[in-house]
Amino acid sequence: MGPAAVAVLIILCGAAAEARVPAGHLATRRRDSVPAGVGACALAVAPFGYPCEEHTVTTVDGYILSLQRIPRGRRASGGGGAGQPVLLQHGVLTDGMTWLLSSPEESLAYILADSGFDVWVANNRGTRWSSRHVSLDSSSRRYWDWSWDDLVVNDMPSLVDYIYSHTEQKPHFLGHSMGTLVALAAFSEGRTVDKLKSAALLTPVAYLSHMTTPLGILLAKAFVGELITILGVAEFNPVTPAVASLFKELCRHPGTNCYDLLTDFTGKNYCLNSSAVDVFLQYEPQPTSTKTMVHLAQTFRDGVLSKYDYVWPGVNVEKYGQPDPPAYNMSNIPAGFPLFLSYGGRDELADPGDVGRLLGDLRGHDPGRLTVQYLEQFAHADFVIGTCAKDYVYNHVVSFFNRFN
Ligand SMILES: *[C@@H]1O[C@H](CO)[C@@H](O)[C@H](O)[C@H]1NC(C)=O
Ligand SMILES: *[C@@H]1O[C@H](CO)[C@@H](O)[C@H](O)[C@H]1NC(C)=O
Image (cartoon, rainbow, N blue to C red; front, side, top):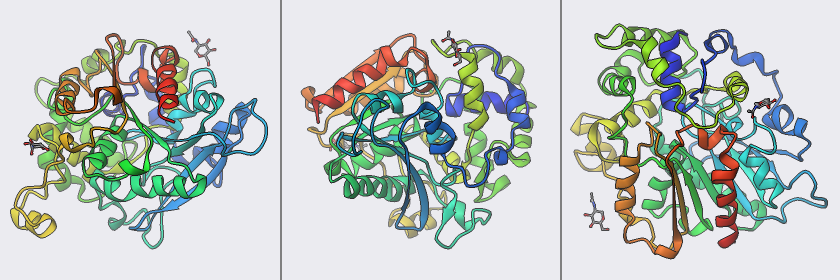
């Protein structure tokens, strides 16, 4: 995989490095570098001395998702589950490891556990530890026939229900990037809002019209028109040759210098530690479905947030009963639902202009239940693996959750 693909990953999953991104990691990494049968608990959590349980949740449509539970902090004693549950939802092309790799002083999952919360880490369908299905094999096309709409309808409600039934408490929700998009879409349809205490949304994404990254724009154009044709309804795995060669093609596009782009995307995050980025890139990126990438590209292109567009009106009518895909309306999010939004001035994915539009949709929200934090110097990855995220963001998340316990 060349620098172009790395740049794309930086755009899409926010894995931007302050220095040079170690492309060699991506080129040489094999997914089987994680021993078979080893889960995130054993790999990432136990070494830091935290208790950790592996759970699985089966969605209505048969996907078997893995969840890691850190029921309490390192120094807490006694049985788990006494604290308030929190569900952590990662973004696109990453998985739950996102929250677990930095030190206990820096990773949100450990900070929450040490603050008395019962932490549950989600892993999207198709990622390393959530690649099973009751009847489909993950090498089959049918396994990958879903877009992020399916996460709204199936995965998020299944995860919330599972945690509720296990702990008998309503969880708080925290999402990053596409994790916020799925949550906002779900809330706008009244899904899970009555089963959650509150939601904290880091780098909230509802609109992508202002996404300024030139390669992102180019990709979005290519995704909409061509990607399904090139790759079909399939897995979108950045480390496979099919996707890597697609990126190579895009870099030949006039006016696109992928090397310059890579430089453009470095140095913008505020407090990334390059050795933390190194560790991150040992486990990420993770695959998603091509339909999800196309759906994100449609959001960018169309400037509205809608369900997946099958393009042919006849197919949309068959799926939705109307020729255009139905919109998700952010104004429909219940006004009394506690929301915490944190976004960065240098974020080129969750661009401040697009977040501003979302805030416009939320203007009818109960002001006592909407906390908005703007961090001018922060970019997309700072919110997840930034060494200063605790001071700037996570401490505020902890107080917000405590307010609505
Ligand atoms: C970066 O991370 C490494 C490894 O965790 C650590 O030793 C180092 O002190 C960190 N540097 C900064 C500036 O936080
Ligand atoms: C969204 O809903 C609000 C009221 O609930 C309505 O005023 C607005 O027109 C809707 N927006 C769209 C794009 O349908």
